[in-house]
Length: 240
Image 1: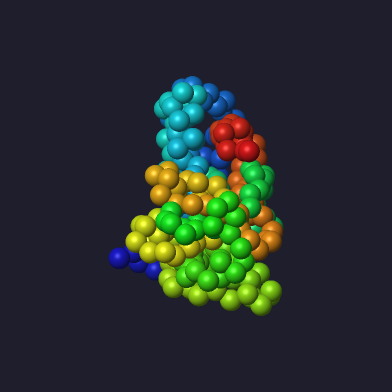
Image 2: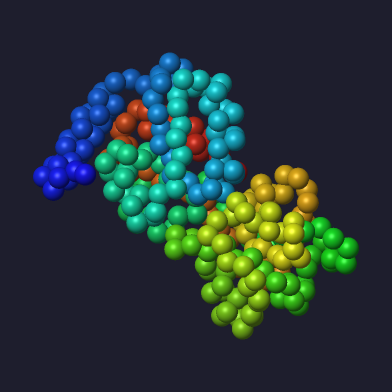
């Protein structure tokens, strides 16, 4: 177990080492073709499914020695982790970070709803009545902006039966395959989860604001050549 003294000095030492690394990165040229730098990304489980395949595909050609690591960091810890040099970028629907980080929009998309393919489903579109008649899976967490779905429905006096609440999207396809339930989620996420074509995806029958995906970084690294290259790479690869 670390002593109190060790814990007390760990933070300033970490900051000093980060400052040294930053100074070196700002003065040294960055060559993506030869660099073996590791870039640390924060994204959700579904963000990994949506973003990582295209990032890795391009990276193996443009910068084959560069390494990536991805982890889910609580939003409240992202800025400090970035400032300490322990995290380079956060990617996803992260509106609360806009006031404390540099950011750029990647794309905006609409919400959709998805359920298992079966006989008797409406074709093309689903009505509000049919939407509310189904049982639903709700994906919620303390960091999720998708809680706005519940607020929007409630503000319009629309109540749906929530059969299951889960903190992430990864398990949703398995649940839907074994039930007649429905999930509401960003359109791009729906298509990413429907790679087996087991589900039908409908436009959400209730008007809602779109969901924005953004890339965030700390302003202290604006002049870091590697950070500059990688965020340009992110924009070029992920922007729609």
